[in-house]
Amino acid sequence: MAKRKASEDLQTHNLFPLDDLHEDLLERVLARLPPASFFRLRSICRRFNSLSSSPTFHIACSQIAYREPWFLMVDQELGAADVIFDISEGSWRSLNPRSSLKKEVIPVASSGGLVCYKTETGDLIVSNPLTGVYRELPSVTQVEKTETLHAISMHCTKEYPCVYKIILVFGELSHLSFLVFDSSKNKWEEEVKLVKKTESSSEDEINEEEVVYFLSKTGDVVSTNMQRSPSKQYSSVLVNENGEEMLYFLSHSGTIISCNLVQKTFFELPRILPVYFEYSIDLIESNGEMLVVVLSEFFESASLRFWRYCKREKAWVQAAFMPPSVSHQFYGKKMDVNCVGHGDLIFLCASSSEFSSAFKCDLKGNEWMELPKCFVNSKPKEFLSAFSFEPRLEALV
Image 1: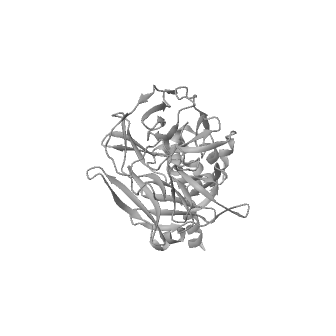
Image 2: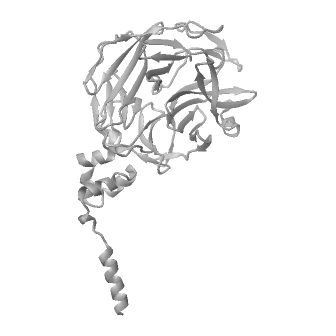
Image 3: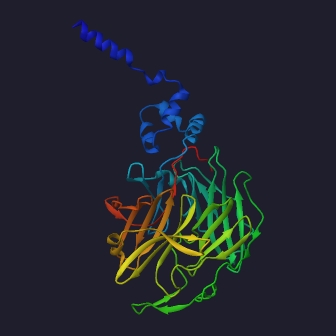
């Protein structure tokens, strides 16, 4: 009996109440939790709940170099669906804070823990989807309403508090310009004009300002003028190549435009497929390089492949592909594929009038997985595209 009591006393002695844990140490421990786990802990006590607004806790969170991404989904109504896919838990979840955005907005870019939205009036808003805090950017007065906006890109720094830049590329494709918004200065910088370089040419090159029509193999009249989803209309990829900022975007005819923001030049990359060919195409960033995703149809089957551009050879090289057994289900369905990359992870939305699904791919092993259906109010939800961000409480707008 005495032995049993001594054992119980020892267990009691070894218990370490959280109330006795130093605040700094507690914050460093909780900062390492996945955000979804931390939000569940907030309901345990007031002390945990108060941490979400603690500046020192935000600093502790900023010292976590990497967070597994969340993917903000865009639905058929062409707006953010208040739904995310959490990679760390492999599940769908609601994102209630975004309801604080009162205006009708469409997500157009993301970086770090922030997402950039575009309003119906053309204004831009930057928000932290995790906290719901947002900021309306100053109006862009340098871009005339008659000028075509081609790309909206975003870059966040790693340090705390983060500094972010929004980059706009606009103008006729023969005379492009770009603007940069610097959050540290809270203003748009002066317009910079880009000079066109003739890096490549091809026999089937067409005037980007003209629309060419041709007959598809099914007898339909098809236009070379791409009609992209509004959420991907301004999609672009921003990467650093040999110390120079490079921005890539798709033109209306499906060619890839490469902009060197340091040398202030741009040029068109060679086409992957002939201009008179039906396909769905998108650009992604993966581990600091630009990849092109192409869904095409050959020999009564569908093929989805990733390509990287080799500047030395001035040619496209295959980087990865979806297994034919998976991509074959896209055949004949006139699919639209929209992708987003985050490190080695690729998130892909495939949609048409008769089919919709989401996939994730680990590029290292070319491992593909179709995600389970998302249900909202007991009804399956269909998505057109997604934007990746790291769930970070400390990301300031």
